[in-house]
Amino acid sequence: MTSAAVNPTMRSHGWNIELLTAPGDVPFAGVFQPAKDVFMTFRDIINEMRLSFEFQDESSDIWNEVAFGLLDMLNVSEDECPAPKFVYGNGMNQPVPALPELEPDAPEDRAILQYRVFKHHDCNLSADQPSKCHFEAGCAQRISKPVRRLEPRYLPPKKASNDPRYAAFPLRKTVRGRKPGSPSKRSASGSVSPRKDPDIDQAVEDFANMVAPPECNISDERAKMTMANFRNSCLTSAKQCAVTGMGRSWCDSPTIGPALQACHIVSQLQYHTYPDPESDSDETQDGGERASPRRLEQAWERTWTSENGILLFSHLHDMFDQRLFSIHPETLKVRAFMPYDILLAYHGRKAKVQRRVDRAALRHHYDMCCIENMAAKMPFVEQLPRTGSVVSTSGINTPLEIRPTLVGIASQRVLASPSEQNQGQEGQGPDGDPSKRPRQSEISKQQTYGRRLGCLMVT
Image 1 (cartoon, rainbow, N blue to C red):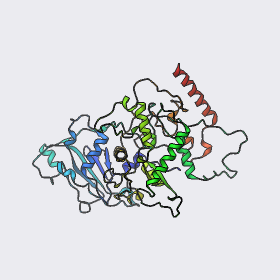
Image 2 (cartoon, rainbow, N blue to C red; image 1 turned 120 degrees about the vertical axis):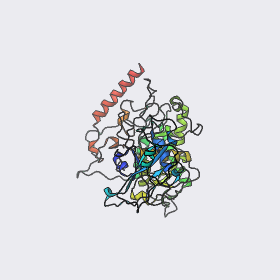
Image 3 (cartoon, rainbow, N blue to C red; image 1 turned 90 degrees about the horizontal axis):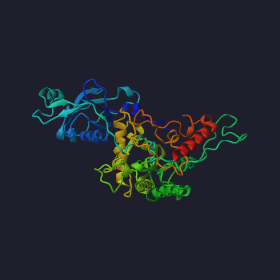
């Protein structure tokens, strides 16, 4: 099943609270605050900025000095949306103003508040004074341009790491070409045969795209059993969608209805980012510790446990994976990060999450959503190891140099943004046309090159 990929322009287009460092500048970040069920405060914005950015030219305690000043109100009046002009200190605990709902027929006329971000120290001016007065008094100062923070847990959605210490497709089989004279999947009319069972197709795709630690020789049997156990264990304690509360079957068997899927909270493509319960959340593990075979196998196993799973309808599953909404790990409230009408219907609703679900996994997904949508305008570059060593590729069917071009592996080039998505997966064009799959001769050349490359590495 294909769906529209959410690009960075779409994410920044969803902001109705824009952040700037100076008047006339282009917003460097932003958030979306729905019109109803408002629970995001200015302090929440600060926390999300700390996840996403760094001020390299400022002191280490800069986050205690950050203040907001209202710059402009676009397509909305002060009577319609009373907004604080100056926010600092205890004022950070107040909710971010709720703007009027977006008119579906006039997206360009959406209401937007622009806030300037600057440094401020304690003063005697009242909180209702505009930021201009604070700059004139000298208690407010311009802040430097932020840069994207290097968050070791972050990877773009639906992409595996390009680091050879983590990424391997041990179960992907060699592509087989069609024998001469064999009938094409395309009928005489030129139409493609419809899929007979979407659930089976999804299972086959998940199996082929399973990522595992390179040093772990995962057999087909273990992989199939792991996937089956994940789904079965998720269905043991839940029978309905965590967001909508619906999905119960009208029959005794099966107990769930169609289109309800077991969803990974931490993506199995990014298994190595699963929160380590033995590590201190305030301490950062070095690369060697994170990449140890024991730690990687434990993270892989945790990714496939029921504690990392919830049930979602297929369309919500896709939006969850694209980081358009998340579930707050403490309040369990659904938060829509973009003004998508399907999601707005559930924003603020308490999700039906089982007690067994790992709150650390929910925290991970929530944090990644914050980074994904707030830092949409800043490019992401994965930090690969500087050493020239290459891990063993025993049991890996995909050569290291070819693997990044396949499904789920991020390219080594600079991504356009943290939210750049895969297009035309499994060698197909964007429209899924089988005729646009790579020729068998091209695949054979790639495989031959991979084998030669492996021989060179061994010698």
